Length: 144
Image (cartoon, rainbow, N blue to C red; front, side, top):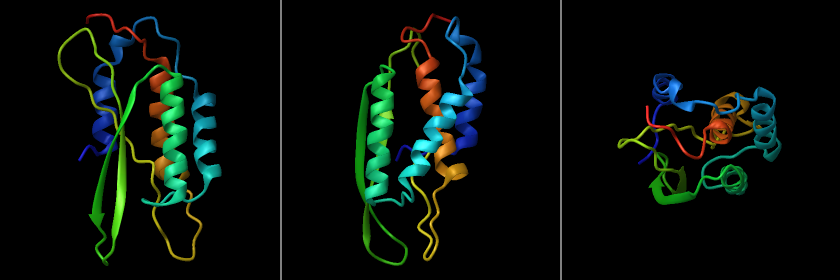
């Protein structure tokens, strides 16, 4: 499974901060617009139509930024019973050096009975940061 704790992902980002070179700066307004677009979709529990719509939004934004996207589909059994299909999206590019840097966030929301939980700070914010990073990271990395 490709999920990593967001704290680890942000640590990896800080460690490679100097590799960006002359890339344009991070645009917080644009990142917030991506967060708002996810929240407008509404709840996005795993396996739902909202999760599928969010996946398409993410896929489109990554492709616009020049990142090829692939998906990993798998099925899990919920603790209370019943299967749900989960889908990870991965956007990758080759760098100038061997090795990998993983940045990850989840786009789904909790499924809370009787509540309309849209996950602005839990799910949407992490995805918004990664989408903006995808825009500002240069297509061709310089060797560090």
